[in-house]
Image 1 (cartoon, rainbow, N blue to C red):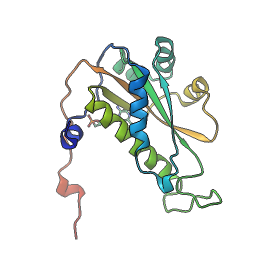
Image 2: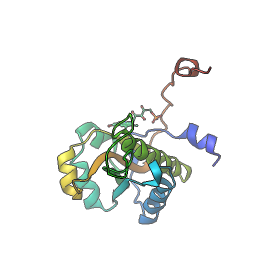
Image 3: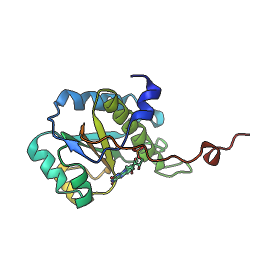
Image 4: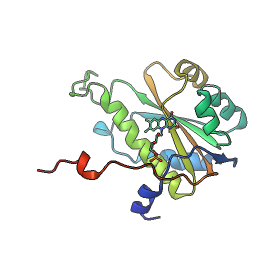
Length: 177
Ligand SMILES: Cc1cc2nc3c(=O)[nH]c(=O)nc-3n(C[C@H](O)[C@H](O)[C@H](O)COP(=O)(O)O)c2cc1C
């Protein structure tokens, strides 16, 4: 798939037809994420994936009802976390950029975009979710205290062809001088 077609064609999908996802698909999605640039190549994103029925159900219990309903039937949930104290930090582990710890989430977003575009290019749809019960998810996945949970990504076969939500006019968000 052409990169332009992939970028334009990807959609957040909120209705899925159940299909099991093999671990190889998850592994290649994560590899795509790992190709993303990161602060000093610090590679702070970490990944947790549920692909079994029990795992998927357990993650669903950590989602608010609306996100659980929107992702019923997905074949996987991938949770990304950000290792703290590296991205945007000096060699003493102190944040020293104007964004504080912002580059941790920035690096995570770059990885996630690679992952969802790759998924789209091989026929899987995704939904990024920023709303979940963080303490329950942290306990379920046994996430260490030096990682921040960033997003839950639902991955599956779409059962709907959603319209592209409108984007702002480029002139309204771009200043060239
Ligand atoms: C950080 C982040 C968090 C999001 N959280 C949710 C969410 O909790 N539930 C949901 O249905 N969509 C969520 N979305 C999806 C956005 O609503 C969606 O990307 C946006 O409406 C644009 O649609 P598109 O992805 O199809 O281009 C999230 C997206 C991002 C980037």
